[in-house]
Length: 356
Ligand SMILES: NC(=O)c1ccc[n+]([C@@H]2O[C@H](COP(=O)([O-])OP(=O)(O)OC[C@H]3O[C@@H](n4cnc5c(N)ncnc54)[C@H](O)[C@@H]3O)[C@@H](O)[C@H]2O)c1
Image (cartoon, rainbow, N blue to C red; front, top):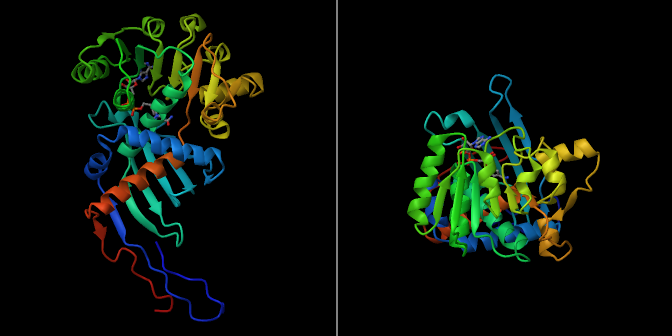
């Protein structure tokens, strides 16, 4: 993005680098750039994840800002840098305020800042709740594919928690070739369950859709389970409910007691990231003092270093990596820039002469 060249003489007047224009990308543009591109987004997220697994990324631990006066809420900072053909740095800054839902607005809100690789200048601020939901759903769809290659593709899916992320995951699954004979739903909120049921009836008219009033029948009747609740501590305790060996996409990370994980084969996206912040895998590590309960990462499965059993429950707990947001955010930026519709804020960076 810059035209700066290295100077032979370090004291000579430097060549001026170009300060990139600063663009603001609203949600409507983000949605237009991503809608209908689900298979492409899954591929993109998979390649970003492979770059991360190959070490071509910097993805420090997420920083959780919590509030003593609002214990259920948080804002998380996910700084990251990715190499390969993407070569972009940035930060996702995402709020989770679960009480918003009762007040009629979404739980999560977010921005993503993209920084220029060469100058460090921020060059875009994107609405990012859609990017975050899309990368989460794309990664879940990718995991569902990789983790079921050795078994019969699940035809009965259960959604535990029926909010925005559940909807995005269903959309990404169905747009990447999945179809289901039966779809089960369970949510503590009847309103969430019936809203999601309405969405499912519109988008998958041939599936049998059942709203379950309790957890057990949902789990027992699903070959694949998607946990997307806002539970802050484990509430699913009965190991026997998983005796039929389902694949569990444990996207919300804190629903299952350690015993359920200990009776299953476990994969994560990134070990260091996932064994933090009181996730269920973190609780297992605290309980057992070991990481031996982990079979590996999804990257290990993709690279053939880990096999996925068919005769045990398989639980995938993805912490969610900032590099995936960067990859999707850069894709959105490039699409909008190519369409000529970038909304640039003139003179956003203004004080550009060092000595006036
Ligand atoms: N791992 C990742 O990469 C990643 C990325 C994005 C979101 N998430 C997580 O996904 C979860 C869902 O996000 P969302 O935007 O869909 O939230 P949302 O508020 O729209 O929906 C969550 C739903 O879960 C229900 N719920 C809460 N506790 C429950 C319980 N014990 N049993 C059944 N239902 C319960 C709520 O009633 C609500 O309808 C959040 O926990 C979020 O942090 C994870």
